Image 1: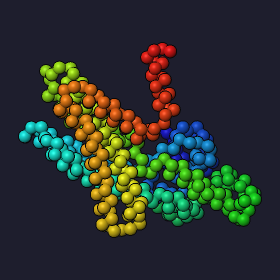
Image 2: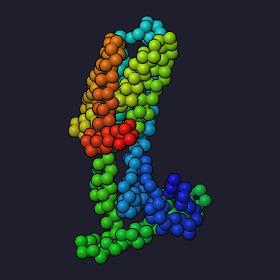
Image 3: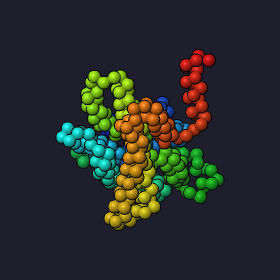
Image 4: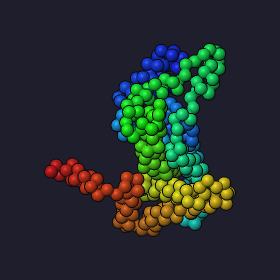
Length: 359
């Protein structure tokens, strides 16, 4: 793991200069770049320099991780935990909760999650404008912010900006003589750097899908549900093996297919309403409308998928309806999170056939 703050010397100017000049070597031998994005990410000289250097070297593996998602995931997981605690207490006091009670509890959970998700996508909405108006000369670095004087020791410190600009000129200075950039003047390499951010970086980050939730993240958020179903499994003691299989099939598909699809739909819906209706407006009515639309979307999709599983699980003794519903939801989840690519599915089928038959 290479972290600039710890891997490049921060006090020795000679070692710092060598570290900055050798950053291309560090990046060239790295496999993946993780961008821990906040709304001030592209205001920092160091962060942007490393990101552009990564793309300039022809590297493609970038993991875009908004820092606000960590707080969002914790809040959603806590809300899901509270939802399951309510259902567990209801079961202990009055018995198995009816479908209406479960849907009402799911609605309250969806409303809570939608409010958190809307705040998250609202922050993500700042990303396109930041990239479109980026200028490296307007970025900030610690040395310039403190006037090149160490606030603790009051000693003069070297300017990181000059060192980074020198490294940029070594990399991008050849573009100064290009016919298309002669009119840019003395600092054309800085303008070339700006164009890299506004074009290549913007295209690379936005095509990942700002409002797209990875399957791994969706499963982590859903993890509190595992404890509820493990607790319910204690009531299965003495039942035949088929009842155990039915129960764990129902729980697994619900937790790892139905709920993740609902989360993904929620993010898409909140992102769409935030861009189309809210935008830069501070209207509380529009924000409430966006939150309500996200909650309705999540309740409608998650509730429908849950009912698709709950009815055959509760009211059918035949295994076929539950198996068909489980297969359908598993395929739907794979298509939502991985995209429907017939060539990839055909490769999976052929590899499965080869592993089973040896042909």
